[in-house]
Amino acid sequence: MKKLVLLLLVLFLLSACSEDSVVYQAPMFNLDNCEDSDGGVNIEEYGVVTYVDDITITKEDFCVDDIFLVERKCQRNKIKTFKVDCSLFETTCVYGACVGIDLDEDVIEEILEEEIVEVDEQEVEVLEEEVVEEGGLCTETDGGRDYYNYGANEGYMAGTWSIFYMDLCRGDPYYDLVEYYCDGDDIIGETVEIPEGYICEDGAFVLEEGDVEGRGTCTETDGGQDYYNYGANEGYMAGSFTTLYHDSCRSDPYYDLVEYYCDGENIIGVTVDVPEGYICEDGAFVLEEEYEYTCTETDDGQDYYNYGENEGYIGGAWSTLYKDICRGDPYNDLVEYYCDEDIDEIKGVAVSIPEGYICEDGAFVLA
Image 1 (cartoon, one colour):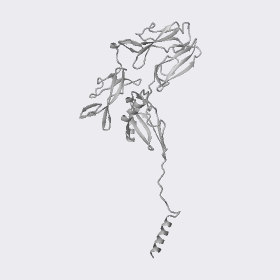
Image 2 (spheres, rainbow, N blue to C red):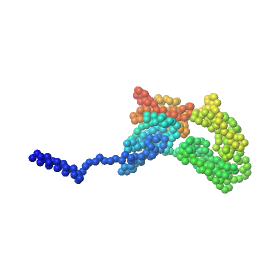
Image 3 (cartoon, rainbow, N blue to C red):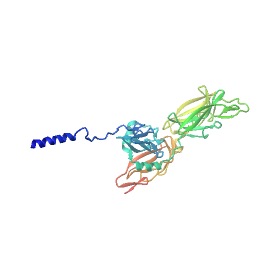
Image 4 (tube, rainbow, N blue to C red):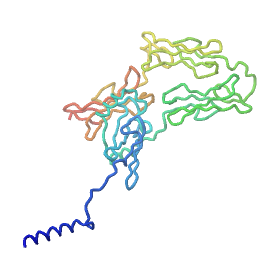
């Protein structure tokens, strides 16, 4: 009898495992459905993260203002979001990236490891409401592509900041105009033929009238090789007439002067070391004791116990946005901005809150 019962039990179990039985299988996940166009936490490049599942989700890197960057990346098949302070890399945030960082990769990685802050989507929504519209860093004096007025431009050309691009007449005699204008942060140049009834003069089209003899000779505003006064030159350089060459200070901090002057109809350039007791400012040597610094601050330097606001250059761009701030939630450090007199620019440093203090309104106060 026992053998019969055992046989029936075996037959029952076999029938339960037949082809018609439902066997549970773990769901399969796609581990490659998140892509980041800039390769991860790449703060020097604008990126878009795309997540594809039942629906497609795209999230892009963006600037809250010219200080803070919101950076995205894929991590474990999810979109992760981080807040980055571009001023810690001695630069600004432009179009979803900390632009023009001049630091070694290991230094960048070390700062990111210590300072990058992960934020959730609720915090991102708050940051998006704080976004300051970006108008571009490039500036021009003639309002755009104006062929009938001379203009000078400051901005990025081929990735490098420059103040040297000014509208100019080209050829001998002049046969076209090179017009420079702004496109966001960048300077763009185009050549335009001279229309009938006009000539090109001083970087603009003017009605043709009277004698044009004498155009094309070299002229300068500082009377020659004068290192103590700024000068601008018009003349021939490498066989082409140009209005681009004017005295300028070179490097950061400035260590020499590039002085341009006329030799016949040609422009000549020489480099001159800054003499002792002087600095180079606006294309000329000035006594160091007479130099007026452009960077200003309200708390007189690296003062962690008083709130301060700064105006000056940072990353090659003028800004009034840099103010001492408490960072974190709850606050875990202070970002102190100050003027660096060696290069006359705004610098930022993160400082941990000392024992017995809290951070409040951009300064340390007793707890």
